[in-house]
Image 1 (tube, rainbow, N blue to C red):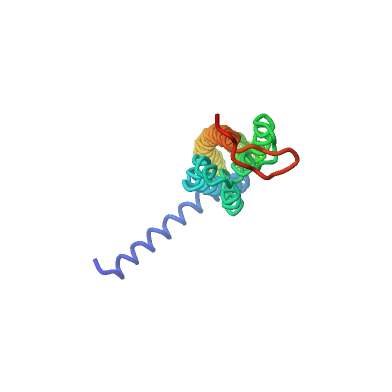
Image 2: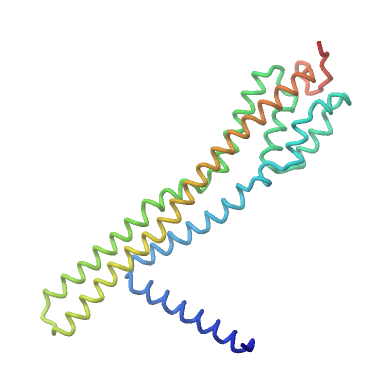
Length: 241
């Protein structure tokens, strides 16, 4: 098939698809506008969270390897190079790891408490948008139901006027179409959104567990190999027994 013919067929299929979609949306009445807005918000949040919660973005391998090899820096007697590398890295692992090895806390308990506070702030930032998906899951089917009710009102109002039978039939068909279209649209928005919400919720739980494990190990290794002087952030290798 010539390329020109293939492009013509593709354009025709795309035009036909957009036309069908437009007729479907227009047939749902005014409520369809709110459902479309919900779908836009849902898709936007899903894309943003999918990009934000990627494993290699949150926990870069190089940062993890550095935090798992604090002993190597202890053998050199200087933790400052690792601290500087973490400061230049914007990942979650680097931000939390920097708190764990900052040297600002004399005991492991103080370091753990500081890391827990920092981790809660990070998780709160990562969770942004996910609760809104839950709202959309609840609201979009209700909007579909509202559209269905409005469509039924249109159907029943067709039997109470003085119009002709042909006009009544047209109004009944329009009301039924509006009820069905809005119901379908509400479900089409809610179903993928609830799947995405469940996935991101489990993903956030996994991130929290991994962050906790990483921080506990980093705090243990740091205080094992370095001693923290009171009122100072200068660290020296600890004396191993």
